[in-house]
Length: 115
Image 1 (cartoon, rainbow, N blue to C red):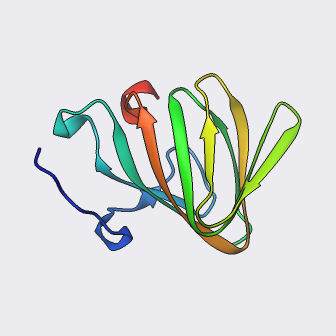
Image 2 (tube, helix red, strand yellow):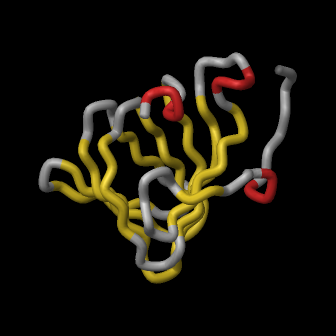
């Protein structure tokens, strides 16, 4: 793979696997490209909540809106320019707020192979 640039409009968004909420992911780089990471964007409709068992190391960068992640009884909230790290083995609840959110994510290894 050569050096590339991506924008949120490039992502092939699909509903988060196994979820009914208005949360969508769009991988731009993953196992099909031969690298060790998955890179993509996440789009959250307003006031959505999902429960996830994190099976890979997951880094979420909030680009717009706000996202809260609760794990082990503690909640962190991030806004534009802030990063949330979710280590493999975490059980989390991810919640968007009234304005929804746009995030970028990087996982290691590839999340699609791990679920």
